[in-house]
Structure formats: structure tokens, C-alpha cells
Length: 152
Image (cartoon, rainbow, N blue to C red; front, side, top):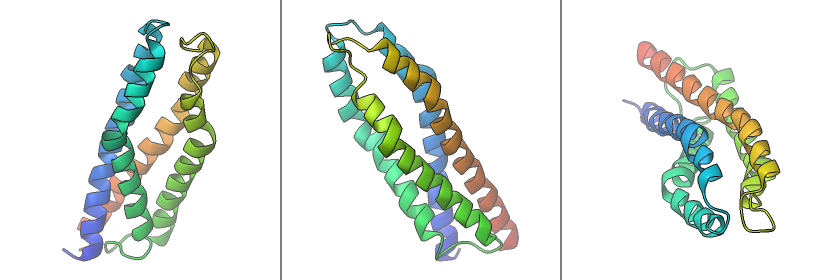
């Protein structure tokens, strides 16, 4: 296997991991926030935030780096437009997280210390776009991996 194929394989695996992770968060983790007591929510949210660094943010950073590196090193048979589409999805994800979802999650606590119902509803409805971006990127990388294996 070429270095580009290895990069594609590793980035694809991390991307699929991210797909599973984002669906779990959307369908389970975030939904549980509504059941955390008003007085406990602040502490719960801080512990949750610290707990995602290694299992969510670390792999996501590696997917971004891998996707960027694939613009230079990629497997055979992969059209340039696929590489740029993948990178564009990652840029959209980073910008959306930095400008919208990150600040929304950081300020999800109501002034009384509990979960803000308005901000929580906003997160639960708009986060589906983030789920779609991550899922689309994972599917794209799987397609590129299959194409690269066929072209090798």
C-alpha cells in the first residue's frame, strides 16, 4: 500500500468512528441532559465537557488533519473533486462548531443553574446539520476507500 492509501485508510476509520460517535451523542447523550437535575446540571456539564476531549475532539482533529493531508497524498483512482468535497465538509464542520454548536453547548446552562430549555431545543434541532456533515464525510471517505482499492 502507498502512503496515500494508508492515510486514506486511517482517516476513513477515524471518520467512521466519528459517525458512530455523533449519532450516539445526538440520540442518547444530549437527550439525557434533560434528565439531569437543576442543581446538578452545572457540575454534570463540566464533567461531560472534560470527558469528550480524548474520545470526541482528539479523533475529530485527526480526521481534519488526515482530510487536509489527502489533498496532497491520496490513493489511486480518487478524483480531485472528492478530495476537495471532503475538505469542504471538514471546513464547514469546524466553522459550524466554532461559530454555532460550540458556543451553544458552552452556554447551555440557564441562569438558575439548570439546563436552558430554549438553548437545549435549539441545540437538539440544529445539531442534526452537524450529524449530516459528519455522516456525509464518513460515507464519502468509505466511497473513496472502495474506489482506491479498486484502482490499486
